[in-house]
Image (tube, rainbow, N blue to C red):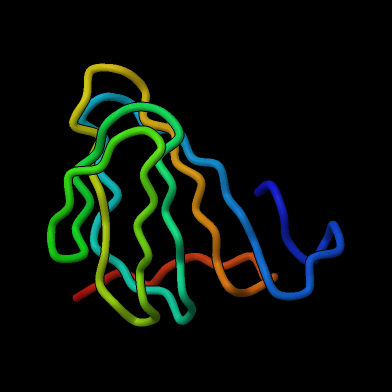
Length: 94
């Protein structure tokens, strides 16, 4: 966690994630808007299906199934920003 209510945020939380080559974050949903920003590497993001690369952001509406896979050979780094200051973990999609 980079930002959340514990450090003074009132309506935002930001996570930094790192994923090895081939690693998958399975489909899940969140109750609030999420913005995924690829900092480094390449990914296939499922919200529809989007090929994402460094310096690209994808907006995920609330309760929308989404996930991603590192499609590159290097580490994938993503910032995930949520419109909620609480520590939020997505719900698995059926």
